[in-house]
Every structure is written in C-alpha cells, then in structure tokens.
Length: 456
Image 1: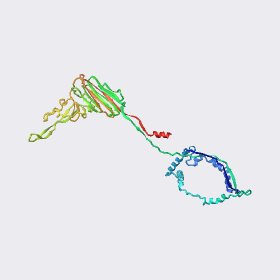
Image 2: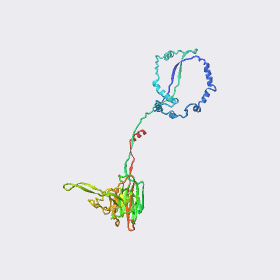
Image 3: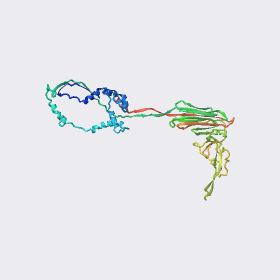
Image 4: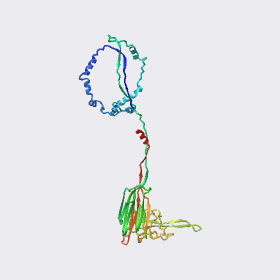
C-alpha cells in the first residue's frame, strides 16, 4: 500500500553567524591535493576500476550476481528475502573464512540492536548541549566592521515540494483445501485383449468369433461328419480381464461319434463316448500326452479278509487280511485325478473277486466285464474302456465353466478306430464372455470457494 504526501514550506529563520578568518592550509594537505589532481591520481585510479579488473582481482566477482533479481527496479519487497538470509546465516558454516564473511556480516548486523550499548542524551546534563547553550541563547549583534564577531542574520527559505511514498507489505497466509477423486467403478463387457485358435488332424474348424455385444465371443471346434479312421486335436487360447463378476465360458458337445475328451485350463471336464463305447488301442489318442496314456495299467490289492476267531454265537471277532496284488489294465488313462462326482472303485468291490478271495478275475486282460465305459480306478485315475458301438450320438452335453483372470484355454481331443468302416464326427461350441472394470472420474472439490475468494 502506498501513500504520497506533497508539502510546501516557507521558513524565516534567525541564525547566529560567526565570521572568522580562514586559516592557511597545511603543506601536507596541499601536496596530497596536487597528487590527486595529477596524472597518477584520481583519474588513473578511476580508469583502473572496471569489470575486467574486478574479475582479475576480486574473488567471485560478477556483474550479474543472483541478488540482482531481488532489486526489481527498486520496487521489490525484500523483507522476506532479508528474513530468509538472516535465518539461513544463523547456523551456516562455510568451507572457508572468505566465504564465511557474508554470513558474519549478516549475523553482526542482526545481533547489534541487542548487543550495541545505548546512550541517552540529556539536554540538562550533556556537556556538548550545555556548552553550546550560551551561544545559542545570546548570539550578539551584528558588527559592521568586525569579522570575528557573531551577529544575527535573518534568511528566508523558499517553499519546497516533496513526494513521500509509504509501502506496506501484505501478510502471507497458508491456506489449505482438498480435492478428492471419487472413482465410480463397475463392470462391463470388454474386448478380449488376445486370443488364438489352432487345430491339427481331423479338425477342420477352430475359430473364435466376436459376438453381438462387447466382450461376447462365439467359438467352434469341429470334426465334420463321417471322418473315417481319424483323430485330431484343437485348442483355443484367450485372456480374460475379470471373472466372478460376470465372465464365463459355456461348452456344448454334440454330434459325437466315437470318443472325445474336453479340457479347460488343463482339467478334463468330459471324456468318453456316448454309445456302446469304442475299444481303444495304440492307434487312438496321441501317445505323447501323459494324461491320455494308452495301454494304462496299475497294481491293486484284491485280497480278502479271513476270519481266525469266533465267539460263542458263531460271530467273527478277529480277522486277518490275505493280500493278493494283481495287475489290471485299461485302454486309456484320461486324468491323473478323478473329476467331481466319480468315486474310485476297487476290482473287488465291483465283483472282480469273490468275497472269500478264492477266485479273482484274470487281471491280464481288459476289465470290460467289471468296468464298462469310463471310471475311476482304485488309484484315483480316470480311465476309459470297452469296444466301439454304432451310430452318432443324438444327445448333447452343455455346462458353464468357471475361468480365471488372465490366460485360459480350451483343448479338445477326438478319435475313432483307424478303419475305413469306423467313421465319426464331433461338434464342440460355446461362448466366452469377457468382463472388464470401467471407472468414472468424479471429484469432490472443496477448493472452489477458496479459488473464488482469491480471484476477487
């Protein structure tokens, strides 16, 4: 804030004037004055003071010091700069005595108001004021002929014009407010970031096609009608953003003849044949896959319990196990663990051996008589067995399968006996729905009133 005051003053003053003869200048003063006015005096000294000489002789000399930015044409408010310098120098220790000089000077001036002795000037006791009072009170009268006498002279001072400026710095306050992001998120169908389809052997179709809505895809894995003596595999790989919020896959199997196995993310969900069932030999299913192992066999104890002690009522009270380990065989092992709903069965429990253990079925051949179709054996392995039937299955199997975030896959194996008379087909289809997170960008702005106040 600035104030300007214009004053005009006219004064008439009575001044005591004492005229005296000027004493002669000493010889030393005259010699010094002559040197100053000579060729080696003030003119030579002034010419040698310039920025080049300063750069050579003055450490850290610069014509553009960083403090120049504070000047601001003489109108900057430097109070805060000075306070910052005082605070910075209060405990600053430079690397050398030369660099320490600036802060020594700042600290000296900052501390002087408290350390400098204060002297009170009393007009009634101060010697200078007391000694000059008679001359001030009695200046005498003018002496026309005497040069050494004091006399009273009246002079008039003309009015003067002055402009005075007052500046006041505004106080600085720290104001705080908050602006908070309130994301509004939900789930919606989104395009699958990546997918691919691959096929081999008898499969003629392996495709994933974007559906009608965002994030909905149809897929088809197919072996055409009456493919004779063939086999093959197909696989779909795709990536999902979210599951459990609406993402899913559906699988439908139809037009099946003779056998198929369908797996999602490495877990077989359907394996087998819908009709009388083919007999699988070494020419069906890829032998390189451990989970579709041909000619699978396992050892199983089909021994019996034999009673060795009875009570008085003829009831057995003690028995011993008579072990009888046999080797059994199935045509194909489809899984290393049984899927939900299939309980492992023992050969003995299914009638392969008599209760007394005297006659067990021959373990060297197929277990067709005791385990038709596909089943879980005593080791908890899912196996497939029996001979081929006739015709294409007219039914279908469908289900919704849970997936996982990230990479997923659907794998299908199909086969029929390698004979011109053994023909078949399969149609595996369904949908994949991808769900992604979608968020808005709403803000809770508590700073609007403050911005409006500052703008004023």
